[in-house]
Each structure stands twice: as structure tokens, then as C-alpha cells.
Amino acid sequence: MPTPDPLLISVTIFVVAIFVGYELITKVPPTLHTPLMSGSNAISGIVLVGAVIVAGRGHSDLGIVLGTGAVALATVNVVGGFLVTDRMLQMFRSRESQQRDKKPDSPQDSGDKN
Image (cartoon, rainbow, N blue to C red):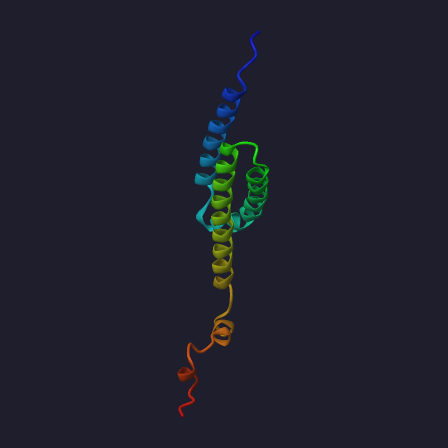
């Protein structure tokens, strides 16, 4: 029996992961998208650490380029996850606490007219 090509196995796993991920995401109800994104933010942090390790090793130019690209994309994903989580948490705050936390935009808004 011939030995299967490792590249073919890797590509097959990648394609199957794309299909499974797409099917899972399309089956999630819209009310769960934001909490799931918050949870996946931790996974993006792990990807970011791995990308920094790959980019920092410098075994080849391709590894450095791909690692740097992965660092950039994972950083965007982590920051976006934090922004969405913050927005989600603001939706659950009471109106009184939102009014109390609101600060005047300028000294003129405070009512002090000299």
C-alpha cells in the first residue's frame, strides 16, 4: 500500500474543516452569535501566540511572511472580538447607569459659563 502524501492529507483536513465550520456557523441562531464570538476571542489569542512563534523562528522567508500575516489577521480578530464583546455588554446595562457614566463632551456642556 503506497504512503499517502502529507500535503494531500493536510489539504483534505483543511477543506473538511471549512465545510464543517460553515455548517456549524449557519446553524447557530442569531441570538448566540455575539456570545460565541466572545468565546472564540480566547481561541484567537492562542492563534496569535502561535503566529508570533512561527514568525519569530525565522526558519525561512515564507515562514516569516506567513507568520507575520497570521499575526496581523489574528490581531484584527482579537481586537474585533473585544469591541463586539464591549458593545454586547453595553446592551445589558440599565439606562440609568448609561446616563450616569456619560461625561460632558466639553467644558461648555457642564453649564459653567464664564
